[in-house]
Amino acid sequence: MLRPCFPNPFNPKTTIRFDLPKTNRVVMDIYDVRGRLVRNLTRGEELSSGSHTIDWNGTDATGQAVAAGVYLVRIEVGTFSEAKTVVLVKQGAECPIFRHQFTCNEYFRAYFQLSSETSD
Image (cartoon, rainbow, N blue to C red; front, side):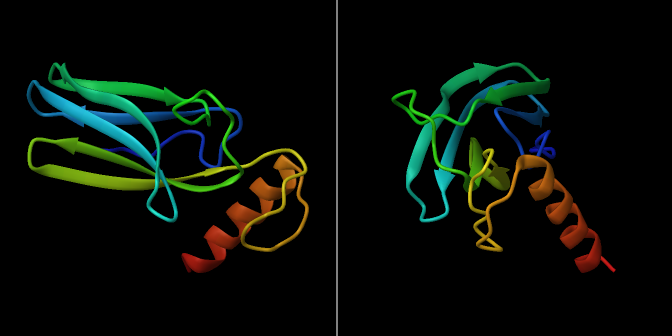
């Protein structure tokens, strides 16, 4: 159902891609790492079968920008649910992993270096 979000890490927005095998009602929410609901992207809208995309611009339900960090994208379709993580980075934000001030480019380089080292 959920495909990788792109870009990820992201700033200022990421595209959430997913496939539906048949027409169904879809609920899609964004949660922070503590499990708190940040934003509801779909509220049970009926979507047709096929590929779909929804953009998330890193804001909460009130339209306020959220902090840099890790978030969960959760989709519910009938009795099926799935979640993927996305990482929001901000210029000059402290990296939650390394506790260091990074520019976005530095964060991306560190993220992908770490990813490639752990996949060996």
